[in-house]
Length: 112
Image (cartoon, rainbow, N blue to C red; front, top):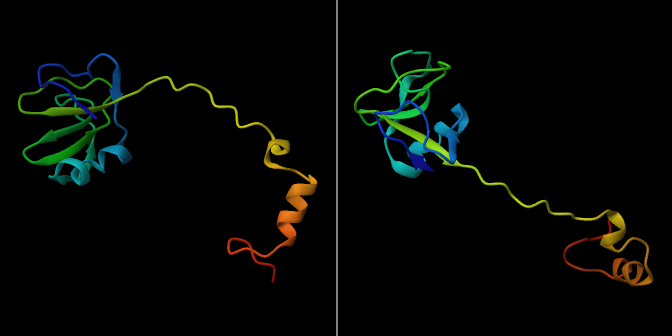
């Protein structure tokens, strides 16, 4: 997670705002509580997930604004390399070795 600065209503470069579901998990990681009501649409608060007076808020306003004493929470997003897991033939299929292994009893798979 990345904490933004109160003087800017947007996430730092290389990060994106948290969604409401992710924002709800912040007390687990950093302490504090969720404000009630948690979600709001305020043009005078930062957009997204922010921390103010020991409580997390989620502002759904599309623009919002910078505000004193508010910490905007964001996340890093990286391009992940594509992993090719192959198709089912890579998993053994009907090879003789696989058929013999499935015929013997083991603790993981039991025939009923």
